[in-house]
Length: 320
Image 1 (cartoon, one colour):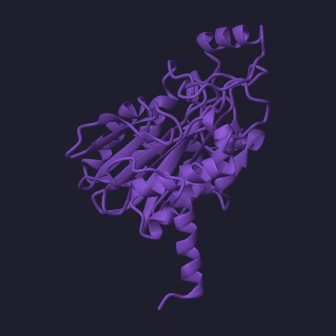
Image 2 (cartoon, one colour; image 1 turned 120 degrees about the horizontal axis):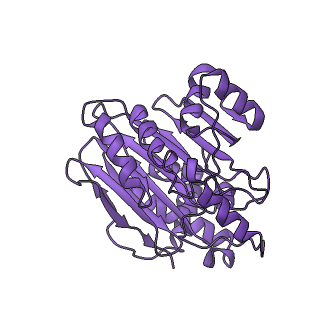
């Protein structure tokens, strides 16, 4: 019997579906373990995560280890050590992590610490809180033994000074100066975890925080259903609580691919004009090892590592 609530849910899904097209295969599937992550730098992240997953390690340990790779790479301008600064020349980092038990931790506007994902894990494990920001997050990190370091590299400082000549703030789609590493994994015990980390949009206003450290926006894990992460212009992901939406759409019976498509369609519906000029991408993985990805614009890439897929890069289908 179809209840009124069920009827409304089905109607809402049908409405969203009207914004989508036939973009291709409904899903891709591999056997566990599997790790997937956003953008080309996901290859290095996946390789580190796979060392743990292939030895029957925990997904949580794998995603943390994977996220630390681009965080520690001074050549990556959108994550960690190599991150471009805000408009005042200060590098501030955001990150979150979530495990199979719905435990989670996050930090935002964190300065001087190369690996915010590891600080986020300490918040999860060592405090009664989920989220620490700014000076409080830095004090906590130092108390936990993290080393205070200068994050503004010579290359990033040079780019910032060049930007100051015009001070024009306009993120460019698929240029990885405003993107994140989002990484989710399913381990051999069929448990899920995820992490997300970024230096945020280059030349942002002081104190700006996007979706990356927000549980439910850039990252969400439900060990009964699946996990999702996002990348791109965080403000638009926050508006729809994107990663949580993707997981809930999977709960309602959609494949990871379909769920990502429906979430992107929600952004288009809410912001029809703006959505043509920005990039947002979603990446999802369910308990069966099925994964999917979808973006507003062409050019969103993601990496997959499993027993069947040896750390390959794929380009996601897109709305436009």
